[in-house]
Image 1 (cartoon, one colour):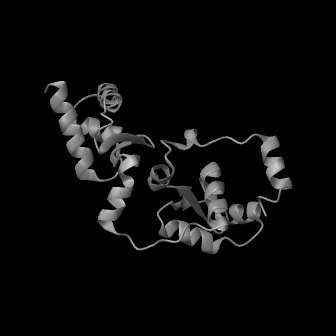
Image 2: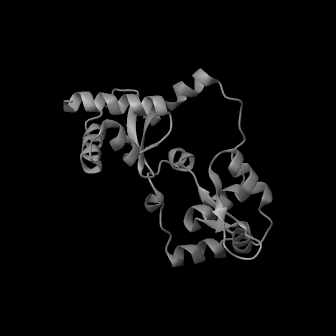
Length: 181
């Protein structure tokens, strides 16, 4: 196959999948090694036209065909979703704790927050921003939680490495200002 045909096959696979497809799976399907597949996809990403409504994005080690952010409002009108409430402060706090400490137990989340987090965890699971990631090998076998690919898509990150880092002095200032209460 020629490069343009391989690109078309990859684009077709990503469109059909709807979700992020791991590099390994794409390589297996198109029968090329991972390095070559990644190079082709990287070229597809760098050559994307800003005048197209879709784009290939790397999300947590996989690739997905996504709507360009600048056209998202039009897509929302197509689906006319029911009005969702935004996330509460408690849900954002819980999400941040999970994002920076994945995988983590509910008990550890509650220890950091200092309050019960059942409702926030439930809402984040319902929104597919976090998921259960197995059980901790300790007494009681508590559930572990981690962020999902939907989290990366929703907040515009490719992986956990893209999360902003807070310096310790920034954390102290936020704590002094009551931002963690």
